[in-house]
Every structure is written in C-alpha cells, then in structure tokens.
Length: 77
Image (cartoon, rainbow, N blue to C red; front, side, top):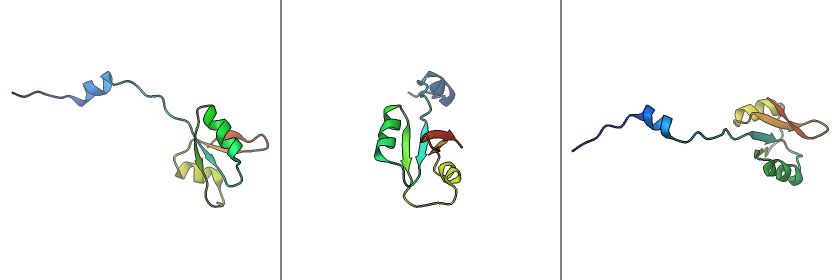
C-alpha cells in the first residue's frame, strides 16, 4: 500500500498566513514604544548596539520598518 503526496496541492490547501509586520527598534527606543507597537500587531526587534545606519540594520534583521522620527512611528525601509 502506498500513496502520493503532492506538495503544491498541500500548499493550496493550507491556510494562508498573514505576513507579520516587523519593526526594528534602535537603541534609545523605550519599552513603552515597544509595548505600543506590539499591542498594534507589530513584531518588534530591539537593537542591542549603536549602528551607523538604522535602516540598513533593519533590513539585515529582516524588518520592513524602523522606528524613527520625532513621532517615533514606523518608517518603511
């Protein structure tokens, strides 16, 4: 007895997951910033060291946004 398994059919049958929005929080971001963003559905990635280019660091870590600016809002990278 045996069976065939077609991966493309499984992929079509599987539920489609929504892409998680990931935001990089540079050094200096507050815990309140992180909490607010997580409450709004963001996955937060905190920077552990100072870097020259926060946008480049966000991309390197797989984030599509970085927290920056006077209003401390996520900005696309």
